[in-house]
Picture 1: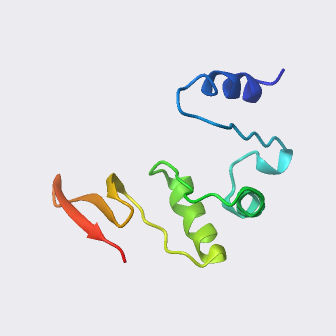
Picture 2 (picture 1 turned 60 degrees about the vertical axis):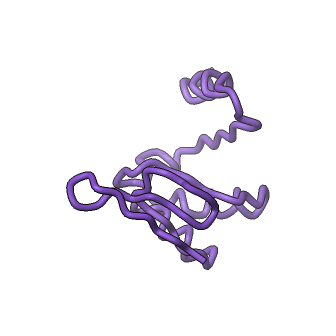
Length: 103
């Protein structure tokens, strides 16, 4: 069993998760957004997720705008809290908070 599947088994034990999806292929090594975008778009097409989330990393900041553009949605980045479906909190100016409203 690969390390990837061992990690997936451990993550699956976290409460509140309904499904863990694992994709293993040489094309995904190196985590290039150009290679991961088609995978995530195909996954979205199959499962029709309401939200796609990622941590605030260099990879996600390159990957999520590509996916959002293909799905014709606006990405929302660097938030620290979700108040409700239309309101997000983002830090600005040395830790002060800003509310963002999307309609």
